[in-house]
Image 1 (cartoon, rainbow, N blue to C red):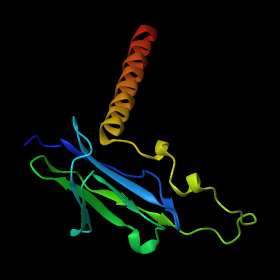
Image 2 (cartoon, helix red, strand yellow):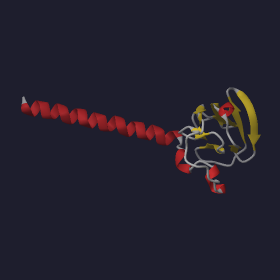
Image 3 (tube, one colour):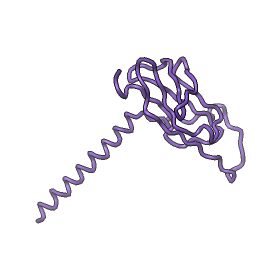
Image 4 (cartoon, rainbow, N blue to C red):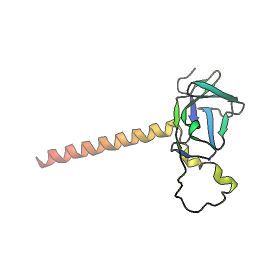
Length: 139
């Protein structure tokens, strides 16, 4: 079993109360496998296609989520935050059916987050080396 081969795709930003949230569990090479979804250490349910939707989330849905695909392993844990809807917002409008789900841009796989961190470190190192070269050439 390859460590880190199972990932849970979940919202990176807090979700608003009342929104629907879909969690996806997959391996590096396969998706749509049966997956068990776990919240705060307790099994919620197993979904045959590896996708679970939390409908009309409330603060009670906030917590630490992970998933497990039998024979492939368990994902790292991911915290899901739920924000209250502001009572001072603009006049209420009826949402369209597609606005209930958060945009897919809120979902980032762990690999992309790691890559972003690596790029930041490399850029900082380049700036540090350039600064050192400039100091030596002046002195």
